[in-house]
Image 1 (cartoon, rainbow, N blue to C red):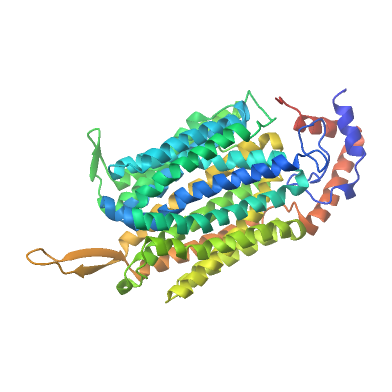
Image 2 (image 1 turned 90 degrees about the vertical axis):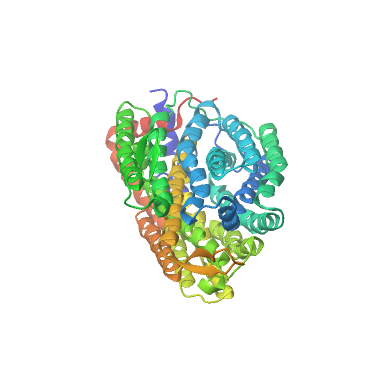
Length: 565
């Protein structure tokens, strides 16, 4: 009784007009949080520290984008250095993403248990070590393995986003998220040409070498300067088993897609592992079978009251489910298109490419990065007025148009214009849809929610790159280069126009699918949310009236209570 009365009093003292914007569960966006002194308001938040954290995150994003950004234009160079095909070289991207799938929910949950700043510090140290050794890779297998360890870097973003979320008042979160999204565009715009220039002149290995001191400095500054999150859940369950099964399933499927063109899609004994013959069919079957224990473990642990990777309680919230599906589909289409664009820019003009070197490939991707820098912050400001759903749908349509335009381009300028349209669409989509997540869940659950969102994003991205590689290997043409006798002529395969057509059309369809999924979200911002908030408040008041509001007050108290360090 002593706990429920204040919650009831607080609710009765706020009128529906105070909640001008609604969360995904119907609560007013700017409703005062009961019994939670750690939630920042316009009067209590530390403006200098909050914006300093944004600046540090900007440096972190720029550094990671520099390391990762140089890989995309360097893929043809890496392929040539190690003598692998289009499908195999996609493992450089996929190994990184698969590790991110497994570790993002683990890191997010560990952040809830031990503190987000503490876990972020450990992640940055591991990432620094992985970046340091990747540039010395003696063979392709070592590089794939080191890239897998480097995938821990993907956990930086959900942890950082959670920390940023806690430092800003609720009404300022959309702008802060938009600023972070814009920083991704800035990271691409700076890192792509810089990384490509270094890679083109001194090789892709030196790009890693040059990043080592910068990554180390960022890690040290983060450890020293970032404050620990006040939200802790020391009794939270860490779903290691579910993460292992999910990572195993994705690894098998990605390996099958990557090795299909080398081993043969129907060959059962293409290789051996511990004396057991393996091939693409077995890998696909294994990937599918591992989904069964994944789901069984998730269901079993959830029934025991444990929080799992694919948390049914959060996924039961409409906005959380919608965001995760949109991010999965959009990530799949983006990496599918990126892989194809890189090789089309690098391929000889005889097969429809533009014959660009690594540096000019990086410069070309600025056409994709600049609109992210422009439209992501713009979308963040517009989303509070027009809502998240319209902008998410518009972003998906614009992105789809960009991918379709690439199928019709014949010159480099036309291709760059299409890439600009792609970047604009993806920028608006990402900056809008993330607000559906961060404004729906409670702050103490932000680590779990954002890490689960990263898991879905990485799942889609990890499948996009190898599928593009498989299509490019399946639909190819050959160029014959004569060599001085008595050497035989050199025959080199390149993807043909059919491969690029299929890839870009599939990417466009996935972007449209993301927009269709967004239609089912519950609006949390803008005019539509105003009407939904008033109706929701009236309905809750009517339901609570017969019981005097006691039941509702208890629900409110449970929402904001819990262990806080």
